[in-house]
Image 1 (cartoon, rainbow, N blue to C red):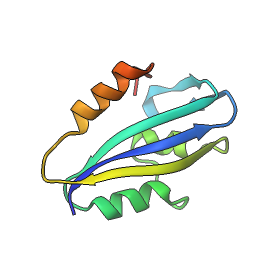
Image 2 (cartoon, one colour):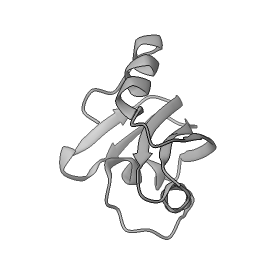
Image 3 (spheres, rainbow, N blue to C red):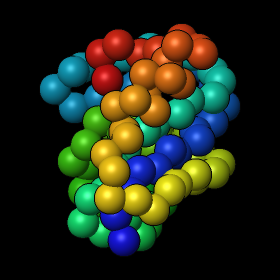
Image 4 (cartoon, rainbow, N blue to C red):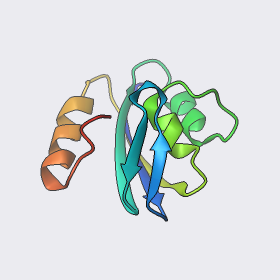
Amino acid sequence: MKGCYCLIINLNKTSEIEIGKLGKINFTKGHYVYVGSAMNSLESRIKRHLSDDKKLHWHIDYLSKNVNCHINEVIYNVSNEKIECRLAQFISNQSSSINSM
């Protein structure tokens, strides 16, 4: 399966989190949306994001492994069309974003 997905993330406490080589970033308590694509194996990618047992590879891994963070929901579509950038832009236009991610 190929497609695009959104992780709906809740950070229950304002936290300064080390995000790989980006360094420490201050995240305000609240909800975040991470938009990603998986043009090889959508199901495996989503399962990886939900797993606690993973190597920290992508920036989102550093946030999702934080003790104050919880992925509440995953929304996805199955498609060969690459819509990740358009979807991320649409969501960004409706809210505030973290530009360094």
